[in-house]
Image 1 (cartoon, rainbow, N blue to C red):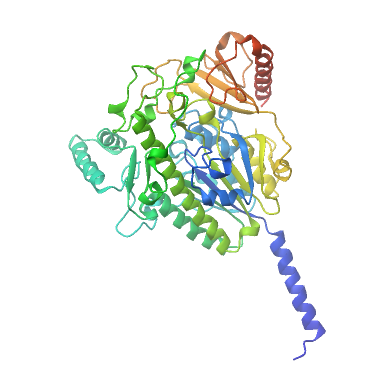
Image 2 (tube, helix red, strand yellow):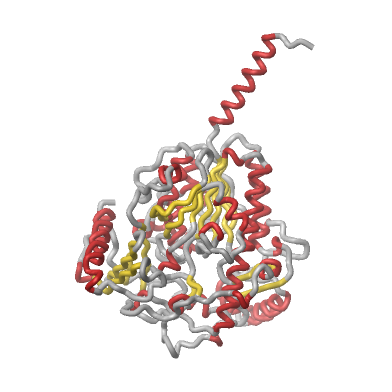
Length: 537
């Protein structure tokens, strides 16, 4: 059969037009948040962790090896990454301030993409739920936020009880018992929940259940279904998926615990306060000690209010649980990556994965986050973008850089008011850098003992921390000083300096050491320059 030149030309033209249209489409965005995930990943050089799916993403994109959060607790750091603005602008320093109560017109990443023609959808923990409205920040989403209650859990399971997500039958029985007790006392809502968790709140759970018996597994399936629907639309999409693990409690199906031998778990090598340290740099691990299987084991006889002194056996169990929870979440990330592949979207989708801050696993006798130390502020960031080769970079980056980077990658104008800088040039040439240091901060009440703090603080004292390639310099400022105010030397409450080349475990504060006089002066100068830059914003 012969095909006329006209028909052949028409087919060729149509094919060319379709290819051109496909190439001119704005890229989709898959935005993956992981709660309390430190850079304990294979792609960050950790050899004893099992994270094959995140490592596969790393081989597709840029791994930012020297990335830091703005404040090492969920609400503030998420407000900063989602808006590209530092905590002294968002005014979110705790887990109770609502972002839009302070800044009603602030623009978030998904909101900005929605304003530029994207369909935006989300599920799981993206913002901290107590720092936004009941719709998980309604202005951010063109599609109403997906509710976990409507997820497809494994047969025989439903949305897990309490905030921990427990599924162990014995735990559920005790929860029901204390629920009835609390109701008989007239307790409701948060008061009832808090009453129950005073009696039954284990820090770990290891049982044989399917992945989607827990919320993260169910959320991954729901997110996959949502991306299938979004891919059918005419708009590019921004899909945000937030995973809860490895946040406490460390719960994961038994098969992920079985990936590791508890005897092989390595405990922190340095479990003491820093020599010449600053008292307000520490906390008493109140988030961990609120768990009912931890409280009886803690002893502050050695270190008083610093951290939580646990037996080696308990430390290994917690570290084992953290590893298992990381591997469980990694499997859910794998489900999302497979969905992108099966939908044929791999070549036109930006994928970003981040952990909102680091986590102490016994170093300095600390557990959880809530500090300006390395283990709390160092956070993973991986970005894969069409047309950019995979790489690893040691360039200094921080979470406020994510907003401008994603805007630039999507071909959108980068808002000029953002505090961060686009890292696209670094992704294209990983040997370059666009900033000399990253900045983190953390508030303290001014009291050394902060029992019941749980991440809250009245912010009377604020510690600002600059991290360069070799050093960390932290300055503690009292009387509600903020970086956008003129610097006042009389408000300095303490200083720290650590040399990671010589002292990677932060064992000695050398800020007053004569050998580091010039370094201390240089780092202090960088901090004052940072303060001046913030005062102009």
